[in-house]
Image 1 (cartoon, rainbow, N blue to C red):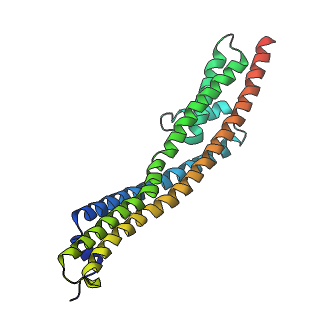
Image 2 (image 1 turned 60 degrees about the vertical axis):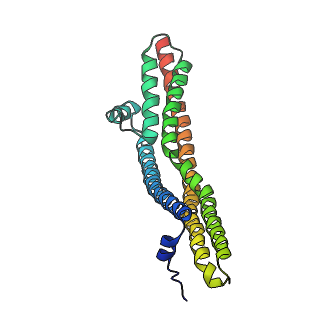
Image 3 (image 1 turned 180 degrees about the vertical axis):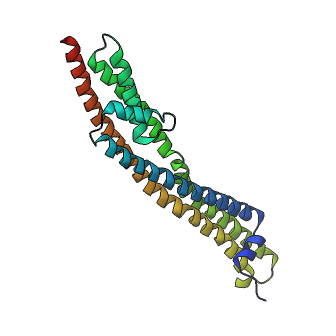
Length: 231
């Protein structure tokens, strides 16, 4: 007697619990791959926009003119442009107020940049926790399906007079598919999470450095304006 051990046949003949585990892992794997491609696009766009804006910012262009060009797209800004727009908008607003200390202007601008930066960081880190969860739990979910399937196979041995490898092989094989699917879901999620976490951390460092350098420029302008007003 020969048993059909094709993957499709084994999945269709698996117990309900094992099939449910396989379906869950398949759905999780599809969601994971969707997020992997989505985050790749988001991070690539953020890196490209940061490169482009830094070239414009350090090209020697007037900050007021740069702000006017950037602010025309307010609501559609992201990344470093959003941080610059928030900081310069608050700086210009506070500088127009009479009797405001230059350092108060700088602190207000820094707070605005921190708020904008936190929004950008939240956007970059969205769904990364899902990848981490998939990577850490999928093997155990697959293992649960495997244990359940093997348990059913051995329980079925009690109904036969003579136990052979052929009688338990299909049950064990279908159970091991669940483990394979768990690993298939987990491995790409772990790799993507580690890669994207590193990419996001590097972007956050770039945003921090830009905010500090921009604050230094604004501080010089604020003190120059204060000295001009005093004279």
